[in-house]
Length: 238
Image (cartoon, rainbow, N blue to C red; front, side, top):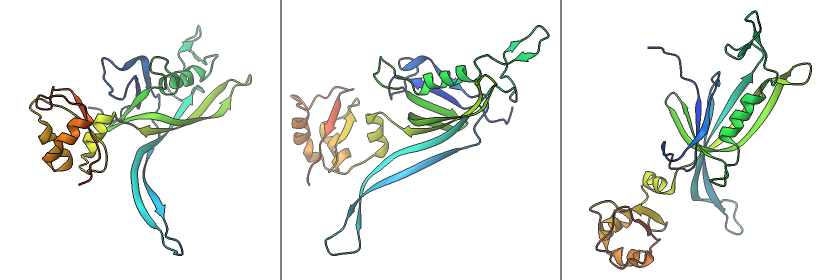
């Protein structure tokens, strides 16, 4: 078995559910010719600055954990320095440069990660895969640095610096955080066998709030919950 690290692959989806059959966008895949040297993952916590009048010290009150970012640099090269970059050959079988240089590769990259998709009214959701890395995200920003050109000005080498921000569908985000704090709104999906008091206990650690939750969700019959129903658990003061 080869020990070589597999190539970075980016796949585009219509929704943050990332369903392979329903959400995957046709022709929405990009695989690099050469892997980046590495990547940078950034984690940020946002605080509210609170400072009392006439004091020097500030109290840093937690606000939220912001989405994780990942930065990647992608190389595009049609100088002949990289194997497989020349597809056309002359009569002698010698590889020839594409007349369009790196533009077709850059346009394909933009089509996958950047272009606005009319059917979802926004750019696509993405999964970046590289070895053990599986990063579900959207493109936050990108810049192209053109480095080498043919005499006619056609670029033949460039790097793209791209920043991606993690994203996850609301239901999955709530489930992964496993928050039980009563002062934030929760979303749960009813599973077979669930009861409203039991779900209230999971969220609030108190089963007795089921009447408030039933009222917030306009439930006429909270004793017969249908699997798949989405329920909101509002902030409740204990």
